[in-house]
Image (tube, rainbow, N blue to C red; front, top):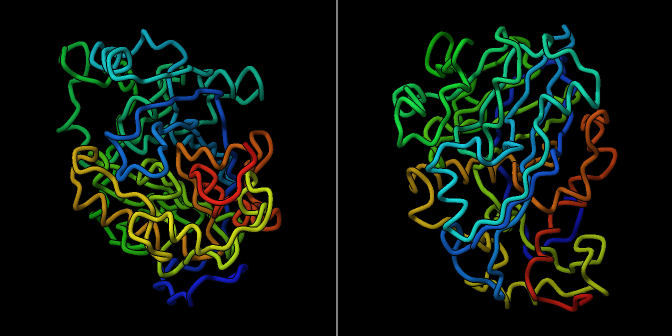
Length: 361
């Protein structure tokens, strides 16, 4: 452990990630989209009067040594009026503040000169509005990859189903590939059912259900022994998965950990501000009404905490605001994350959301 914990950590479970020398190049994409939502429908309890849940909507470009490319999530549409009526109503009536960014296909082509024919598939972590983007901007040969149960839950889509919150044009005219985690040689990475996507151990899709039907995470091997975990919406804020018994609060919280601090703050102050006065339990819980299945969603989140406990794995949540000033974006890669100290820079950054300790106001 690279900091002094408030209490001794317990060993994290063995994730049993298969060994491989194969790696992928992974690049984070920030489209510029931002959202701010009332926090109460999503996370509980209220902590230090934090009333809004805000953040980006990251996408990721994965490039295999063969030249095959995959895009993991497409974020928020650049034009909100393209969404089905149900989504537009939610944005208008629920106190959501949404600033669209640019479409991912346009960023790839106009900014980076990437031939979209090299993108073999768009992978949706799940089918919520802030992840689906505009797949129709990719060539017809680009498949749309979705998780288990997608067809039954979401087809035929809008407008054939006027109540649907997913656009049918996303898959019309292209292969819609629903991942089957239980066919062939069954594999688990950590507690999750897994598929070795390229067949060489360089990138895995993980079935992490509960938040939404067919929710998937990704695990990209950046060196033979280091990884980036693409969490999608398995949780939304660092305080949902930290601290844990594997990753206890620090004995001292420094300005290097939480940039808003003016001076070192004892970790005990954050224990005092914790809803359960704990240094080994996450600050937040997801509300029962938010995920599609609260029990399964909590199981997947616990599995993510096991990945987060491994210092060789960098966990990226799709909407984690604390990543914004740490990540480097396309065309720069994430592969050197360990040497850049990203894990240490990000781990406790979320504590700056709470009015605890001496802050620079």
